[in-house]
Image 1 (cartoon, rainbow, N blue to C red):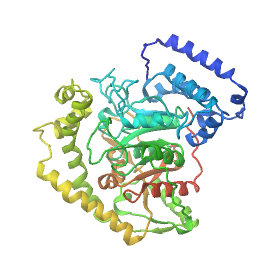
Image 2 (image 1 turned 60 degrees about the vertical axis):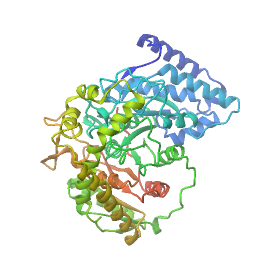
Image 3 (image 1 turned 90 degrees about the vertical axis):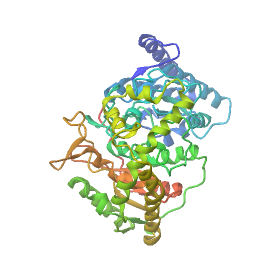
Length: 511
């Protein structure tokens, strides 16, 4: 992580500022001293912190200072952040405390520090998009979703490291280093939103906003013991977010509670409607098997079945039925759309947000792993470039067929969501001999098997949620995923909050 501020303050000066801020926090008003002494603010979820911040039991400045200290201590260990402006965060937190003291209106995210994936354009912090080319790039305006967060009272704490241009799922970045897992720093945090996942899991921030084209929120959430939410495609404004494929792209939160997912959804979707009232004994969930469990490790399958048993004991009805044509349609649709749309989408993005950079110039500066993919599939006349006819078939026939498969499944089986293992196994080791491979039950397999279960929902545009359910025999998080009904995001969030009542929170990582 690099410490960034408009004045380019050296670390020594920033440490002096930090010490002064800590002293001021310790000398705060009496109402800021009523927080229970044993409470560690870094362990608070956003939903837990919010009433304390609103009431003044916990000052925004004290809360932000604790998180900044946690970030300074641990970010480098996990390559979680690329930029943090400590002075600006503390100034914003002091302003929030003043607003509260003066009785001014408090937004839905009042005083909540949030980290942003470094694909999301910001005016006051640099945005690298994970590239070397854009190191130090600073936009003239925020992405609209950033302004929406700020208007709701959030404080942007920094920009998270991510896979270059979000083009991958193992969190590797040739320029800024691989994002690592707080549960075991010899393991990956996943990608491409791995920096945000590491930051939330390591208690540097309660919420991080990532992006997900095929699996890039849900896989990191699963590997690091978090809740992760991919909304229905099109639910949030993506202007100013680096694109891969507009048909598939989304942004969404990573957090340590399902209530935090709902909180962010309310703000970004401008949807403050109450969640549907659900009951475990009236809940029906579909359990697809053939596609969604074929790659799972023995431990993942066992843990998943144990969780299903708990659901049944609580009264949930499980319908074991496969999602028709899942593999056939995913293979025919997802990557043809992804690869075909990248070039025009990036070209259009650059023309609006960085017109001085051409896609050809950017292409030449890419790290080896992303450049290999662009050379093969993305650039004009690339040997694996997707023909227009194949793309049109994927968009006009394959994707609608996948959407119909989901729609029919929900209607025929009368289920609220599909449930399945989030990944094939727990987080793989970092820096393997071959970064495209991992080992499951002693067999060498493609590392992309961990993305498989997220892919059908991404193609269809369904909302998806990851829930952490257990720690493996090696102390690594294991998780399940839910795919919900398209454009019924609040219903899926209600299911998530309901199932979370059956879960014991995972033990935090030992940092």
